[in-house]
Length: 424
Image 1 (spheres, rainbow, N blue to C red):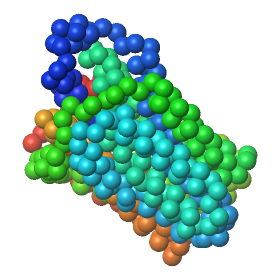
Image 2 (tube, rainbow, N blue to C red; image 1 turned 90 degrees about the vertical axis):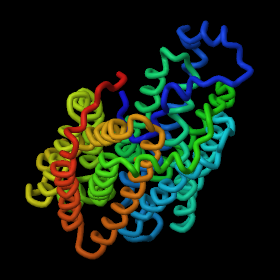
Image 3 (cartoon, one colour; image 1 turned 45 degrees about the vertical axis):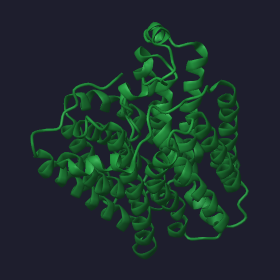
């Protein structure tokens, strides 16, 4: 299922062969099953994306612990989410243009190595400045993995297996999006926040060993030029989708960055209860992602609008519903399901808006996501430090309602957006 904002390579392009490759063997292998080693190589990319996205969102579940450990405010600690997002927004498009025809095996191994370095530097950071350096290294990884990983995975298997390979990599991304935060928080509660980064770094090291062993040469089908990235900006529905992303994701992360403090300070929950609800958030979000695939196949616009309204309701409800475990659980469940729908809905929107230039559309979608993540975390940090967590929830709810308004009005242009098919 295509359920996360990431590159979605055109199958015709990834099937391209070098001029000196014999045509007969290519035809013979086009319908042959992928080898076990090919699937292990694809799995290594999927686990690598899981480790990368988990590292990206790790500070959210550990924010208060890291802030105390490095002697900064919760709002300042939010820069750990903001800074890699800003860099990743530019790194993805820049890296895909700069890499030209460089072997994607080399690129992926370099990105995995950088991911290990980022996690280890974070795990042993003596101060907040060092932590921010580690997070900037991560920003390069985020932009690079989103851009290269799905396309590389499809080149490892025959044509008939490419949709499955794509789904496996995107499943790693989706799982990390909804499970990385609660898993990191759980490890942090048991062993301390540094242990969470150390474990993720160890996972990335395992991925590197497997990639060095199993990844073959992965030459790109063609070099992507800067002009290719401009195509989506000329399409009205792509423009509407990108505008929706900015409000939707900024609103979400202005609040999501401070989910743990919300549960602790507003709902008055103990650390164990917070960890439990973060795990619940991940579980219902994962379910929401898979349910969202079927919903998007019927109506991208309807799914996007539903996700926006559910998320806005959860954010605004958090300031009114009262305190305790049950009210907190109600908010977390609605919020988790809503966020589970978001990646697949917005990815589907862009794929439908720019069907003839999917790589360019997804590259800009990734940039839009990262800009919005960074902006949301920054806005949330300023609001939390100045007015408190409840005010940040209200502001976030208003931003998400603005996204719903965009979808409900501008999204009507030229008919309802609808996905014809999504690989399962």
